[in-house]
Length: 220
Image (cartoon, rainbow, N blue to C red; front, side, top):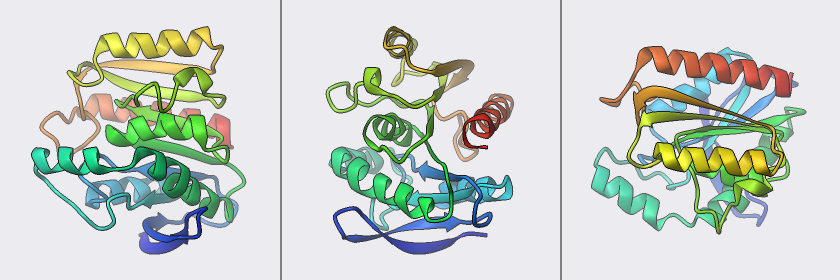
């Protein structure tokens, strides 16, 4: 359904992403990749959003690089400039979607979940955010500074975004008076990725249903 397209970052540098359009005037969603890269699974998420009536753009943060190796994925993620990705690629994607959508949300998984929170802090074109099992370093994106509605989906059996880290995130958001919904699932990290051994169809479907209800309320 979608196509690879070129769009401009705020610094004027051209970059690429996967664009799936529902139509001019439809709300927009920036879809942020996992640490594997902009693969078919993430493009499929953008297509699913388009079928649901959203314009979706997934920036290619690794500039064409893909992997299925956890070691290489960790290397690629560690080498990513999170500040540049947030302020340039993600903001550029939000601005690009804003050409067709009055309101734009951001969502992502794992590494993309952490960048979702970063975008909710730093990208003012974003109206709402949905984070799946990712939390950024506080010194880069303090959740207390989020001023848009945030929905989060986390796994109780996660050794990266641990239950303790999720509890701390929720406490920070509530103490700051943020509009937030935090959901926990009896599942493992990556439970929404159908290509992962951790995939949990019941939890993934429930999370998607909660997300679309949230986005309909925030984006129209």
